[in-house]
Image (cartoon, rainbow, N blue to C red; front, side, top):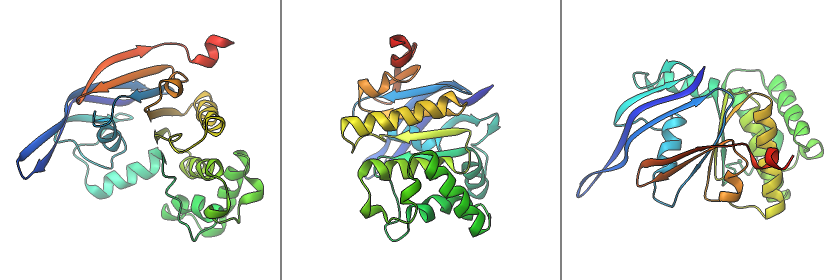
Length: 234
């Protein structure tokens, strides 16, 4: 089964000088259970592609099916419902609310989905514990390290049990050791069956995926499939 199927995806933005096309006809298929890295220079269209994958933006033209469901014709409310059900997001900037504890931050997606607060917090604490943050549920984001904040952000992405996790430069603000821990968490998640798409500037981070897509000037110019670095070393 395919998690993602994109056909001739194009995206343009209107500017004072006229429309500027950022994606120039992306064809992309990602199977369920794949771990895919997307790499390319700044301005290549990586983030635009990620926003369309995550239903945060719509393509100007083309077809996009997510787990077999046509997304282009969906209303904004339907897109939001599918996004909350099927997708988890991990961002470079963590996006944790500073006045909420880690547990409350992680519980938010569950509360948005209608789960009673007590159950949402219970599940959030269990997810934090799974990621090694059992003693930090009540801490505010400012009182834990960057790596712990990123693990909390991953917990928030996973707490709804999404089928596809989209990680946009999740190691960009982290030191080498902490970045390795975050990548290991994503690999473990993928081994458990979750599809992972990771945007990164780092070839070293991309080497942990089973497949790397290289984007240049709004086009996929290379699609390399291989064993992950850790499996090659095994």
